[in-house]
Length: 118
Image 1 (cartoon, helix red, strand yellow):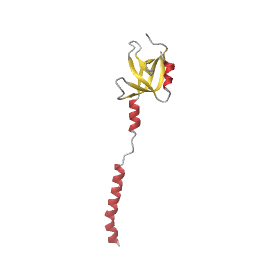
Image 2 (cartoon, rainbow, N blue to C red):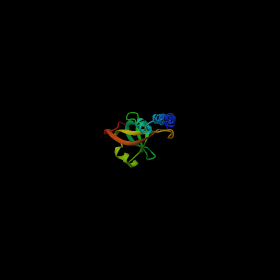
Image 3 (cartoon, helix red, strand yellow):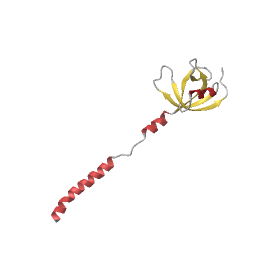
Image 4 (cartoon, rainbow, N blue to C red):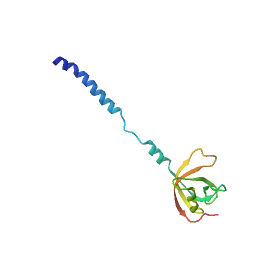
């Protein structure tokens, strides 16, 4: 009986070490999606204007050059109408690969001035 017990000790040690090694190899799940989403957040400042096609754009206050097409996220596109002619800061994310002009997906708008220069 003693001999049988002694011969099982190496088996139990191998099982215990194998289980401990497997537990050490497991890593806690990471949240790269949240980190990437936060890193992609950006802000742009300029004046809200309406393009000829009826879409809303952000333009440079002094040169009147288009900065980006505005795409509403979480609110209707018509929501930009109340900001027409106002200096604003928009927060959101750039939309990659969107035609020749840049587009910006807007999550929030903050008014920073009442009028835009002509």
